[in-house]
Each structure stands twice: as structure tokens, then as C-alpha cells.
Amino acid sequence: MKSVLSAVRSMADKTLFIKWDMTSNKPAPTRTDKLQRLCELAATQAGYFTASQAHPLGYSARSLVHHVAAGHLERVSRGFYRLVGVPAEPHEDIVAAWLKHAPRSAVVSHDTALALYDLAPSRSHAIHLTVPRDRRPRGSQSVPAVELHTTTVPLRRDEVADRFGVRITSPVRTIADVADIGADPSVVVEATVRALATGLASPDELDTAVKLRSARVRQLVERAMKEAGRRA
Image 1: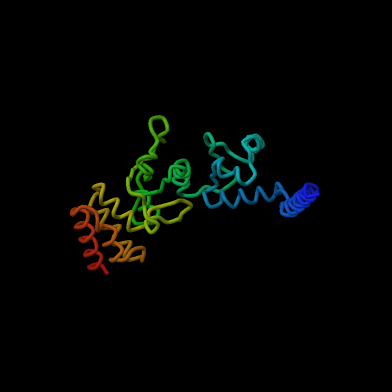
Image 2: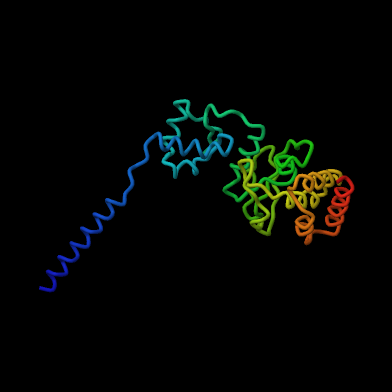
């Protein structure tokens, strides 16, 4: 008798689970839904996206090949695509370079970050990115026109921002990094003056950013802040 009751209860439990599972399932997204989600993603990245980003949205490798053949997508390189028809943006090459290295926890940094924040009069040809040292690509994995910097200390949350369609070092971290690699002092001074004048940085934030840097960097940024005070 007990065995029969157990069997009945087990069947009832399974029936309840099946009913719950069926009611909890959401309808599969339509093609329009998937395309809208892909467009929303790509719109924040100058039209670019990776296959790994598209997969959770419902795009398999086969469907991406189909859309490339249909002229909806452009295959830039392996696993890297761009929506056809998206207007070109001034810094889309930076977005593209960052996306290729994003799986390695890359952030846009140094001279390139200065240019995006409009803290420098012009940007260098090379695109500067910073990655954890143990995630630096080797040999053939490197990308032309990209200058990679490495760090052994993870960037703090307040040292990174999501702007311009990329992950980018904060203004004060950017200034400290540029000073640290021995950039022309006039570049550091100008960037500091602009950052303080536009509210992108405060004296206290700059002091904190360079506190653990070399004496040379601290003195240079201090001189830059004094220059900013004179120009105010």
C-alpha cells in the first residue's frame, strides 16, 4: 500500500512540475525581437559586436553567416561583425579595437583616453589599451595599430568608466598613467588644466590618483595643478 501511495505521489509531483515548467516557459523571441536587441547592443558600440555577444540574443554561428550573405551584417574578422548601414562615428576604430580585446578585460587608456575625454588637442595614431598582464595576447594575436599596456594590479571600480561605447580609464587615472609612461610634460599639464576646468577631475581626486606613483609623477601633476590655478 505504501509503495502505491509513494508512486501516486511521485506521479503527482511530476505532473505539477511539468505544469509549472510549461507555464514558466516564455515564448521564443521573434526575428524582430532578436534584431531589435542586436541593434540596441550594436548602437552602443558604433555598430560593432562579437559573436559571443550575439549568441545570447539568439544568433547562432550559422545564422550570422546567413545574415552576412544576405547583406545585413559585415564580417570584419573572425567572430567580429558590424551592422550594415550604421553611420560611421569619429572614434569607431577605438570601439572596434577595444571590443576585440574586451574578453581580456581591456580598457581604453593613456593617449587614446585623453583624446576621448577631449583632454588632448589631438589623438595619436596608435590605440592605447590596458589589460591585466596575465591576459596579454602573444605573437600573432596582437592587433596592428594597438599599443597594449599591462598592469598587475586590478583597476578599481572608480578608476574605470563606461563611456563613448567602451570601457575607459577615468580622467584622473588617465592623467596619472600618461604621466607615468614619461609623456611630454606639456601634455600632462594641458590635460590636467582641461580636466579641472571642465569638472572631469578635482584636485583631491588627482592627489589620490598619483599618491602611490613615483615622485616624478607626483611633482609633475602638482605643477600642472598649480598651472591650472594660475589660468583660472
